[in-house]
Structure formats: structure tokens, C-alpha cells
Length: 100
Image (cartoon, rainbow, N blue to C red; front, side, top):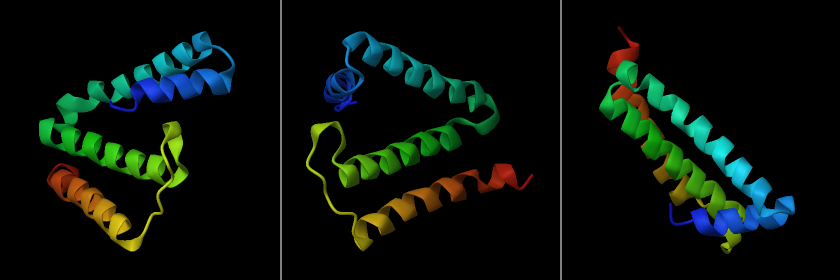
């Protein structure tokens, strides 16, 4: 969320017009809303851990590439380990539902 303004401005510059950035942002938002339709199947905990895991992976990619105008930060073993633990946590939380 804190990157939304910078991301939209950068996207507008990259696409050549703020309208294109708006359309792209709305399309991504619509795609992000679709998983909410799966929430009754997943349950609240599984859904939230999936959202958080996605945010952590996305943030790591933003740091690595220097996206949305931020300085690039190297991805070291500790950051990868932390991200892997979050992803492992997502698998553990969803495991009971997937083994039925």
C-alpha cells in the first residue's frame, strides 16, 4: 500500500500517459479481487496467509529490482530464508485443507 502512489506515477511515466497507468492499475486490482471469491473454500486463515506470502514475495522482488523508484537492495541468504519461512508457513496453514 505505501508504494501505490510511487508505483502509479512510475507506471504512468513508463506507459506514456496517466490514463494507461490508471487502466493497468484497475486491471491488476480486478485480478487481485478474484481470489476473494475463493475465500469461502480456503477459509480466513489460509486466505490471509496467502495474501501475506504474496506481499512478502512482491516486496522482495521490488527490493531486488529497485522497483517503484526505490533503491535496489541485494537479496541475500537471510532474506531468502525469511521469505521461504513465510511460504512454508502458508503451506503448513493450508495443509489440513489440501489433505482432505
